[in-house]
Length: 440
Image (cartoon, rainbow, N blue to C red; front, side, top):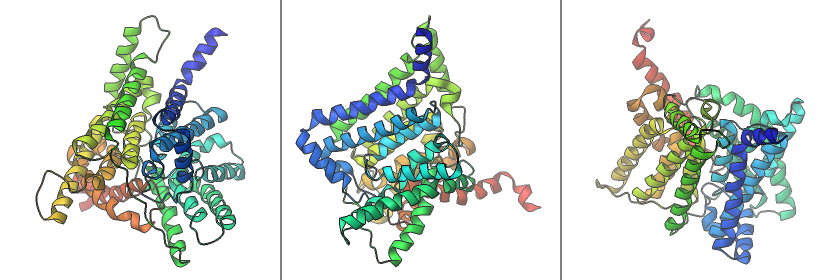
């Protein structure tokens, strides 16, 4: 029995590691702030309309944001354990992405109706909910639709809140089938497939809102002045991941041999293009944590070097980068995309300001798109450095305006933009590589 217990513990190690992170966020909340302030801020987060971009650190303070992240993370991890799914690169990614977006837009109120809607869809199809766990976790891309209706302030809360919850049931119900089809549009070159699905649904909903006279106000702004605290937190998480990568395979006779195996696995990860769904955890086990640590540190360093703020959206971008270290991203395929996105940011800044400068007028305007542009990493992994830079360059421009289509109702807006970049750029790449085929 003891050996069986050890095997099970090792098998579900990624979920145990995630639980520790979630509990850590909650503990940090009560270290940095008082219970009274945390509760007041937490209620403000719950009742916010959460439209893109609503920074929960700005809305409720650091402590309340940490509490929201911890509870959201516990809910997602508990769901995985409850339905009995085993760790994969997909669900490890989903859990990290989930806590990332709990920094802005996703909270414990607006995610539940959507998840329940996915559960209803599974019942309707007479299939186990475990078949749709990823959709249930990532449907929160549409969380703002629930909060927008529930707290729009035009009718009585007794009417608006049930309407918002009912909207969540409906949106969650249709989300799995739309997300399953949308991957065909980008051939696996956009890691943020759920963002494209959410963008389609949000765009349709936004037209209904407009026609019914509902004007959606954009987010309330970003938080500033927390770089020291969040830099320590993000680099601390990177160190934690690094230790998981080196020390997670306990109980072996030769620990050094296991460490070397994980290091070799980390380097082997870089041989893959990263197209959906390249499950690094399935192929290389706990080596992914070394990869995730590198990406977490990379994202944090980029924000600080460019003079930006470690605010809610940028922190979400960093944790999303880290999470996809288990599914498709690595330093080699991320860097070309980010280089292109950074070049685009400076070019746009130059055009708008009228002068060439190494200092961006507002780095935070671009950093969100730079960090999330890495969803196009497989494009660079498959087609090389040059095309990766072009894809990153285009992404910033497309992402800057495409959110207007859905009025900020889709949290994964960069995933929506990335699919349009792929659909535009991929035929051009194919033309350059297969000239004779197009001449026939």
